[in-house]
Image: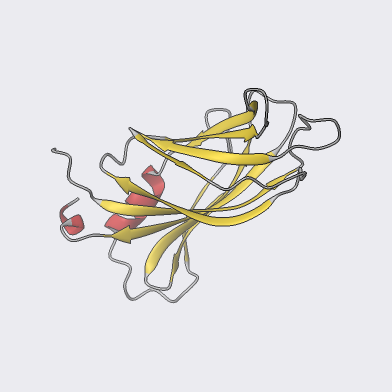
Length: 166
């Protein structure tokens, strides 16, 4: 398989919940999303350990077996930004749902659910569902390598031509 883009993955970074404090009383968090060589970043939210980004970052999917990695950082003015945890998720269940012929499903139909277990970062069951003509997935990720914190995301698969032969 060449470097053809199979689809766009729209990752809506909704919010952080109970993130770690890295400054005196709070943090200035932002999220970096990586997949393969791609790297995207949300805006910084000042002095908030429960930030609401509600920001969409769009990744090009070339290899659906690659995990999406994310890192949360505290923005610092004079020193290196402090890490506030990381997580990763894979999109294989989303891709499996995309391969099904779902056009006739009613809006909001849950196709499958991904259960949390020790080999993923899910804090809660993650539904994959049909919404407005595309496959979506809601994720609550527990951050690793940090004392606390979760991130809430919503994935939306946007097909590009040629995807049907996946």
